[in-house]
Length: 482
Image (cartoon, rainbow, N blue to C red; front, side, top):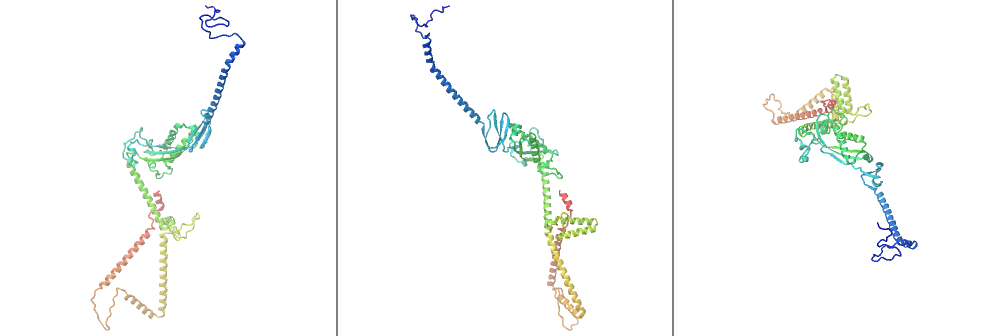
């Protein structure tokens, strides 16, 4: 072990003589307290100042960067809400303000807060395969009429969609639904945005299945109620109501705007037969509607607005006659006459009887005219007879000769009478003659023409009479049509 007092190579103390062959000292240790310390401080002061200045500048830059980052962080919470959108302001996962309208809206940035935008426009969704049979790509381009008659005689539950109606029949349908988000806050709280579409379509499918189960196949496919069904509602309306109830129970904040059945058909294998039945029923309904329209047209043309009331009174008159109630039948007849003449009393509700116009008015006008003519003719004949009787009582011979002369003049004035003049004093004359052919022909023509005119007039009277005949009671007819 070396002696610590031995000099170290290359290290000399002040005042020592240099050692021959030794390397020059690179470090000198000074023992002087005053001057040596001043020299050391003079050398270290510029470096410390440079380091302190550098640290100060770096700190200022770091502060500025932190302020800028904080400003950028805060400004990142300013977002624009577009038209057709609503925004919800969220802070620490809780909704602090909902239903924010379009424009620039501020929220604390994530993860402290968030501004969630929700579209309020009604998304359009379709149910094209859920209740429709499985089709090939070529069959998808065909119409429902062209699809009828094809396919299998059975359905595969894994690939073919269908609905079961209230009468146990199977039907197929395609649907379209549109909805809107009326309460964005509830939408965020109740639904997962990624599964919103599936939830809405699930509620709609449930409503469709329930709605189809309470109607018949005919009602489902035609959209018309069966006879006697007083509780019928369209399938789409009932399905929409049930689907909305499901969404409301979930507090989803979604409202269904529109749910329509775009296509419907019976199972393809039996569709032709089913369509024939539907066609026959539709033709029957059209025939009944046409008959009712024709009935209304004819009644209106016959008696105007009072036709139904007059017809009811005629039915009452016939019913009273069948029951042998003569007085009641006469009362009904008087009511009919007053209705036709516009003299009916107001009903129990205080409203006057509807006016009568049309063919009844024309017939009544002709009847009044004929009555006036007949009465005038009868009065004229009565006046002539009274004058003739008075003249006969005063001078019978004159009246008889005048009437005889007048009668002979009218008789000889006929076209069918031929006059022969005989010589005076001729005691006997025998004429062997035939009928004049021209006269006979004219007589035959006039007779046939008169017969044709009479037949034509009688036919016209029969047609006019049948217009007012009632073969079926109006109430029974109404019940039959219903």
